[in-house]
Image (cartoon, rainbow, N blue to C red; front, side, top):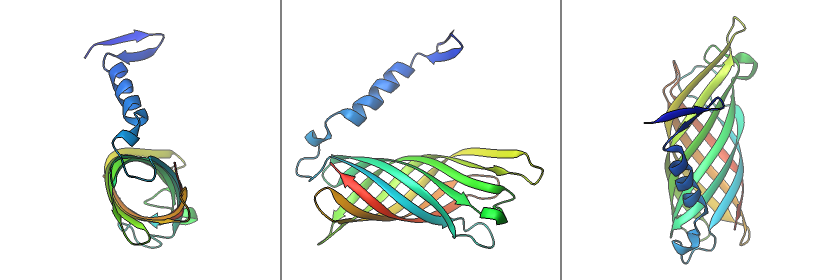
Length: 192
């Protein structure tokens, strides 16, 4: 790998082709691959409740949010990016941290099944996770790990463009004492 420094920024030889590939994947007209689907792109905003089964106490009463973008790549198949935050523990703390939170970004595939009045789906993806908070000593603690996500969705159409989206998801990231997280989410999706 060839590296060069210019103006304090590191540039790598493979960065340009990686950016070009990412742009091509996201902006190539997916309609060419998704003939017969009523929409090509979808954005959603969900409220979350969840936590970790690895800990004692109020494990799943934590609130958060998730925003997502997906693109139909083939009939009944989507490529999706999800970004979210889950506040953890509140004033009680979480895994030795106060004011703790889990931030994540996942990329994965989803397969949809057309039911009589809604679509159900299963998704699997890779993610980047950050667990952050404040230690008892007052020092900040941030842990970042790669991980996996697995989940199920239900998409209930209101009209051609809007739907109610619900999902449950499980996440794995190898933090010091906590590895598993689970969430239930609900909100709206806009299809175009």
